[in-house]
Length: 272
Image 1 (cartoon, helix red, strand yellow):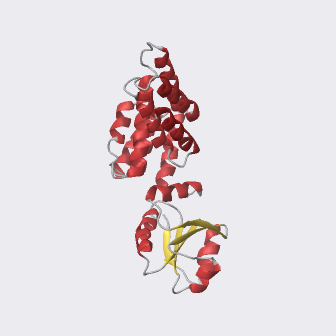
Image 2 (cartoon, one colour):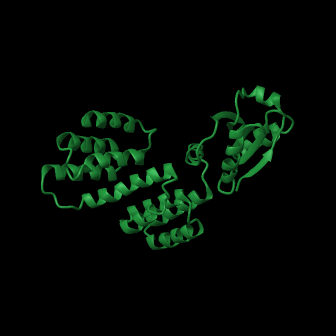
Image 3 (tube, rainbow, N blue to C red):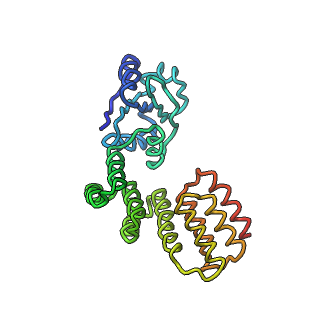
C-alpha cells in the first residue's frame, strides 16, 4: 500500500529523493486554483491502496523555488522519482488506464497484479483448479475492477473456457471506453478460437482461419495482413468478417501501436 504526503522545499530531499531509493515516488506539482489538478488528485490517490509507492504533493504557490528548480511550467505536472533521479512523468490529466500503463512501464506492480502473477504461475505448474478458485475469490472481492475482469477473461481464454471469458467481458460497461475497447478486442479472440475449429469450405475460409490463428499466436502483423487480403479479395466474405476482425484487433492493440496506424490506413485504402 502506498502513502501520500505534502512536501515542501525543506522536506523534499528526505521525503522524495531519499525515499525514492526504497520505492518509487510520484511528485504531483499542483495549485489549489487549478481545476485539472483537482480532477487528477483523486485519480492519483486511488492508486495508493493498490501500489507500493509514495505520492508527494507540492503546492507550487507555496514552493515556487521547487517549481522553478524542476522547470514546472504548467500544472498539474507529475514527475517520477526512482533512485534519487527525477524523471519526466506527464503534464495535465491522464485517464485511469493510462496511469496504470505508466505504473507498468515503471515496473510498479499493484498487489492485485502480483496475485494474478501467482495465479498464472500456479496454472503453468498444472494446478489450474486452485488458480481458478483463487481467481474466483479475487473477482468476488473486486467485482467492478475492469482491469481484473480483462485479466480474468484472458485467463479463461487461455484455459479454453470461452463462455466464462465472454461473461466477464460482458460485465465491462461501455462508458469505460478504453476498457470497453480492449474487451471488444478480446471478444474477437473468442471468435478467432471458434474460427480455427470451423469447417474449411473454400480458400478464403482457410485464409480466415490462418489469420485467426496468427492473432491467437499474437503474430498480429501476419494476422492483420491476412484479414486485409480477404477484404481486398471479397469484402462481403462472411458478412464483412475480415474488416470487423481488423477493427477488433485495433481495439485489442490500442491506437498507440504502430501496426494499428499502418493497417488502419491500408484498410481505408482497400475499402475506398
